[in-house]
Image (tube, rainbow, N blue to C red; front, side, top):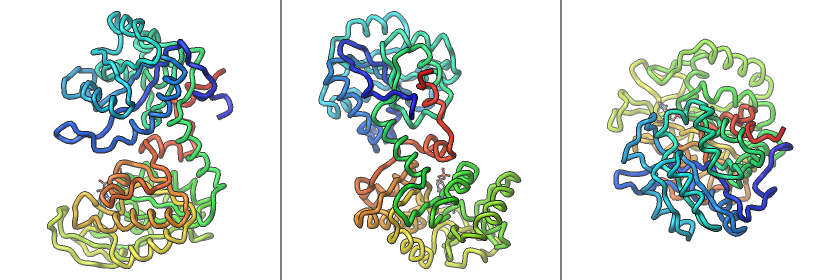
Length: 402
Ligand code: AMP
């Protein structure tokens, strides 16, 4: 963080802050926001600039319009919501570059906010386009990146736009994310340290195990993440999810041989609920994880695994969680994930520090109504996983003052 300026390094009086936020919030069919964490976390940055009598231009994307403007992916629906959240009126501009936008920006008064239309209505946003970024750069004096969740992407507003600014920094949301994740990676946190990894995309998380296994006390591997380990260890996984990939297999073997044999840090479910088809109403039974019959697939933790994992979690002092313990979208296979969410909440109540990231894990906390009881919810799934691979995100690199 040495050469990276934060928002506290600048005074915004009479300045226009061009803030890259991520307001790509999940919505339901009625356009109601189902999780506003990203917007809520951006409030401190906005408040600081407004309190100093600066002007704000907000840049964001929404969905995947792939360069084609459309009403359904317009950011305009956010205006009344932002008004309630910020307790300030927010103006809207139907585009994000061009003369009309520049005019609107030049008419902004101190303390005013302008939200620009979806950046991804221009295909150039996702192409690291110098010209597009240059046009955006005309809209502010100080560039602020407060969009942690997209900072792993090589997109114009993330990696190219800051090049055009002498004054650039990260916002409070970004600073918090980096601090918490660095704290975790340093291993200088209270022990026992428990890492819980689940979900289905083994390739995106395997490297993280390699990093964490050097200092974590317990690494609990559940959900679809567990099966490649079980299979490589000689277990029978039936039709359970299994990402066939030579590179992953090699890394798993390395993790098992080099670290696990020495320190026994990896923990797997003991029993699982298996189903005869991939649907909520499938026939089920409980079997040991390493003897799943052919034709059956493991879709949730069994009762012994729930007890086993929850006991470890509840005696931990630092907990990190990413990825569901089963196909929690199907109610009949959600108990494992929901129990884990509750155990992390209990441990946090008893004083543990908990960090949870990834849309599915946060959604399951919500199912149990305990998302507010976690120490820190990361706003980034992919960005968080990339950071935990010990990599500096391209969006953070682009802020470095040379
Ligand atoms: P990820 O993006 O890697 O965190 O994966 C999340 C997805 O993993 C969710 O949609 C879950 O339904 C899925 N998942 C978790 N456990 C399993 C499992 N045992 N079999 C198949 N899919 C799973």
